[in-house]
Length: 376
Image (cartoon, rainbow, N blue to C red; front, side, top):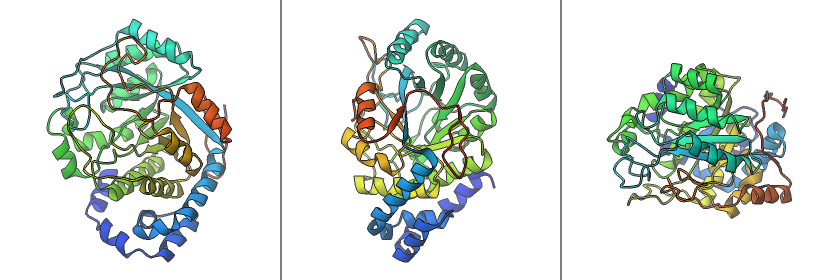
């Protein structure tokens, strides 16, 4: 079944009603199952599961240790362009915002890359605004060529591409894609994206599948919490992640549930997700997909990130700037305000103090479905 069909099926499903009728016994059965179905996942997202958070946390911790050990993979973003053709009200880079537009050339990218690589990091996430004119496929390939001089693994977070374009970037050296659907509710999506190429819900939704078909080794998906009804957003993003994993078993699939942070403009979150609910979402997902990765971004505070480390986290960013030219003397307006400003060195120290092993370079690994097995 194509994921669009699965999404359409559950988009019409009464998630709120099902969750309201879920019992504690259903939750406990789901926690202890070896493989969960969609309805088990929903049970873990229900109000009844809030009284079982400690059990869920223990289960999520044990499953994460089984599949990933105590490894936390570190990376950082590099913003190379903030030119954007979209009119998203929740993003500082949106076309309607009167910010300085900065577009780095090869030498400026090299300067940023040199500064970042000096921290020891060998995995970079390259980001641009969503503009084909501002950041063409050719520009992306040329930027990757520079980054390859400094990093062993390069992921991208850019506008959705055609499969052939993803294939060109894979050939250039890109091995990972991060792309957030923002909201999995079609009507809500249309209301939030009234101008620019981001208006196409399905083209964005199926971008991870096109990237995997083109040879991308890792993919990260998820919603932007605060835009849509949180339980349904997390539920549908989990189904999305599992569909990708089932369709492309060799691809490393991860999710992230970033919460809205302050940005240019007056947009306020339509929904609020508290820390306790975030932990419920995170542990529910980990029990649903134990061999998938989970990233907690610097949108979250240092204290909160440290507190959820044992509950399923596999990837964390460090030394983060969300500005184009963030390591230069004149960085751009940030895409959003970060909360955890720790350096790479401080993050390494914090992880080790808590019994975790920070990994600075990318694993070229095969991950078994029954045990943690990293093969260089």
